[in-house]
Length: 593
Image 1: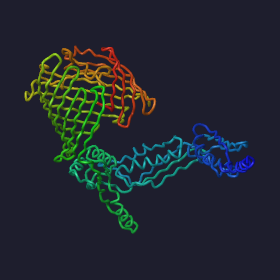
Image 2: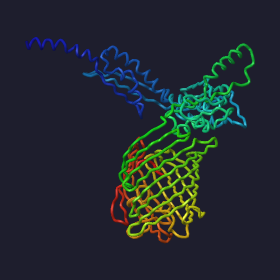
Image 3: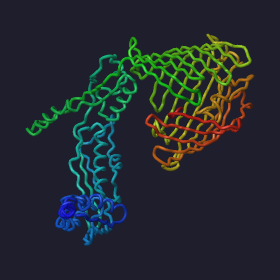
Image 4: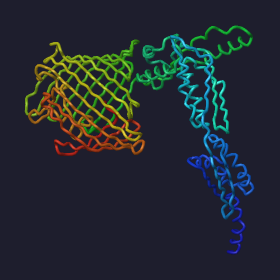
């Protein structure tokens, strides 16, 4: 029986080896990353391990490998390489590919021909700027991938303008191996000029058309612009009314007319003076009218949190956003009604809120109603608001007090960031001024001003310095009668780390209360050792007081971890408060300003 099994194994072994195909190795010798280019794309490597491979097929691939290698090297800009391929016999044959690419071929003269493009005072078309933006200039190494990208980029730059039907009618790269130069020629035909026409809306059922029309800054007769379409789509998406928004110019509506015009031209008839405007098409999928959600969380500022939200997108034509938030140190209930954005770009709202705070020995209970008008863009936001607030305050070891106020406030925010969620370069500035200057529903008249700023300064691709500062000042005849909401305190996750939330301020008995003046500053260095993971060191300082002379900055410093999560940056810091001689953990989610 054993002899029979041995004989069967002896007969089956060659069949098993045959089923695996001829086994061999491939060794590529080429400078730089050219070895990867050849190893990943040569047939010798791609068919290695194929069960049908045999010695005859291997020898055939060895013979054709030099030409294939030269073709691959040409795509990287090397048009005069020297390639040799040899097969070394052995228990496992080895194919050795030696490639000397020689000198790369460089881009010589670049000719860009623009036919049909016109410039008017109403909508100038800068041909020089288009040519200057060519991404494969003279002197660069001529690579096939870069050549294709450059052609796509220049065509893309054109079709985003008033020539969406522009075409690349000729592209030619003439390579001279002797001079190692590639002469490039590109010809673009503009096609007809396009202008926007009337607005058409599809998919709107629950909400008034004014929600869409009032945000439209594209007027009939405006030249086609893809940037204008994207901006309009972004504004509609930000309203919260829609789960999906698509804004486009209906090019299909003019295809038939273009074909008809082409037929007439072939028949000798004069072409039409102009094409019909492009219909501006908005397709939307609406969000549900009502939405309720529950969330839980934790903050090192105010402790554990439970929050219930309820939104209704159409309450007598208005949008309602309401929330009930219960935290260990703060409880809030508020509701706000938002009008649809007006045709002039104004966002009007009004609302009411109840809030209780128990922070550093001071307990406040406030009720407020407010109205606000906001306008502008993410780069420059402005608002003006009026609020009536009544407050009851209890400080440890003192009697309760009451205050009311009716302040008017103007605020402006400037943003210039490379990314609104994960900024690494740029700045944000915010300033506000306001106050209660009339003795109307106001116990103590005051004027209040604030300024905040943060700047991101990259040192290199992996390192960033972040600088932050905040100033606040309140002027009044006396502090009594001014609601605590309008006074200043410091400390916490986004203020002076190393101290408790609003721990820094004016001492009153056993409690800390707000002061008339605020000054804080922070410097942080971040190092990203992986795209999503980073570390930080920081130094914060600041305080609040009732006079400038009384501000004695308290410092905090420490280290932290950074993570770019799908919902925003997560920051975990351990900070040492120099004045209190102890360390504190700080946790925050998102870019807050």
